[in-house]
Image (cartoon, rainbow, N blue to C red):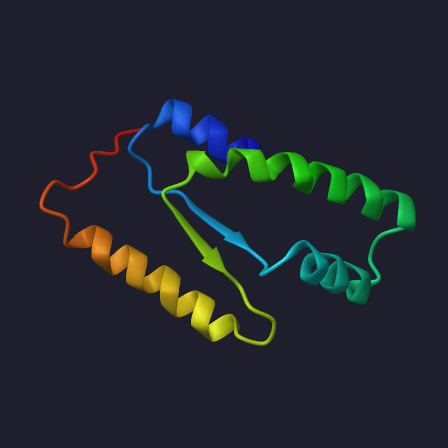
Length: 95
């Protein structure tokens, strides 16, 4: 999310898509299932995620990545990109 805030500041017309789980409980379940973080690291990560939710208005779209439905999330992102290519007034992105 910090990267998205920086990108929005530097490239105001950049297309930003927020990808999330369906709920906080689902996110916790997924993170715990990975078993890649200590309980303390997991707590810090969840605290960070709670703050990041406040940045959602920076994004143009939100895609919910439902458990077991990655293909659907990818399809939604591809549909967003396709729709953006059809805009009457395309985004002007210069770096």
